[in-house]
Length: 214
Length: 214
DNA sequence: CGCCATAACTTTCCAACGGTAAGTTTTTTC
DNA sequence: GAAAAAACTTACCGTTGGAAAGTTATGGCG
Image (tube, rainbow over all chains, first blue to last red):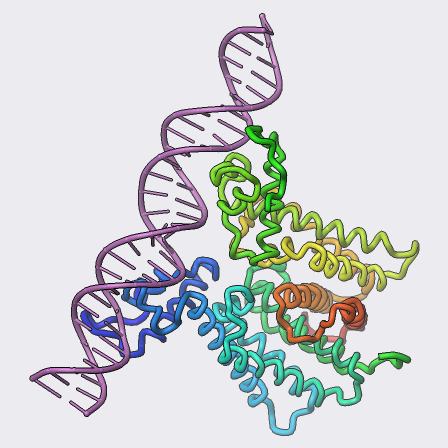
């Protein structure tokens, strides 16, 4: 099952990069992130196993490029969810939209999401990756500040943690097929998602208790 | 660095099982779950790479046994957190304790926790694993029902999802070193944990909106 | 004590993996 | 059309997981 039909005897002309990344996604879907091998990716792209090196360096480079693509798509999904709101939506609705974007990303691009969770397969010192990975968190952070502007640093930290952790944790459990059958059958998925988002938004915008110390 | 000192020329007498599991933990800590190899485990236990087969079958069997141990320890941590409460504590406090137990487990046994998140490295049809993995979820579920007895099925599902996902997601992000520096430095850890738990409990015990349909 | 059945390993072998180096083909550039 | 550069292939190395076959230690029994 070849990702990109290869004209016999012809080089890929830069399309190999895309073909290899698509092969990564295929393998992650079919057999999980641990099953990704350079040789299998190359086979699916119709090239020898050493052909990836000029494009990605080594296996870690390939996976890091894949993860970078994932972060970009995550940011796009969050922006798309924000854009789908009616104009002049409340800050709470915008906060929910960022979470919805994250969940939709994880559901739409399961391979990218699952690889994103394998921190030690990725080179987190890679510049492109770092840049791409900053965006999603920044979007959430901005939306949270806008939705709950009165929180002090500690309350904000707790709510940021809750929002990020719950949306990520939900997606992670679902992507790995864990978490009992809370969110099955499939038809129930969006209901569970929206109920979860509503609870998160409610908690994130709840007033902070008054405290003496930070 | 040998996990268990091996008397030269002597067999392990059943202690090899323990030694191999400890080696798995060591390697996960030092180099991540993907770096675990049968041969390296065997080296650290002072045996040949084929010595694990009689005990665990194959690599997957070893990792499944390790994950089973993890589930057991998770349940123990949750029970310990419940036991640490003053007698007659409120159901809300008991719900928080189950979450605290989960978080403490992930912090205390990072190797077990990280492997737990690699669903496709584990044989989830294994009987021992299935039994061990049921307990923790049951404990949370019971605590939630006790703390919010009036919820309908849908509200319960949403709150169960929130509780499990947020506590798991928080632990996962921290274990993988992700999540920006929300929960660093180290001293801040328990503060963040307790603030997070307070938010979760508040959300989980909030009244359900009245609805027409399920 | 001596013997043996069995459990607990070791050794050997294999295909597949990631990575490097060197060679070959294709494409671009002038 | 030739030279240079890019895009690969081939060959090789050390390592991995697993199977098969051989070896050694241990416990039970007379």
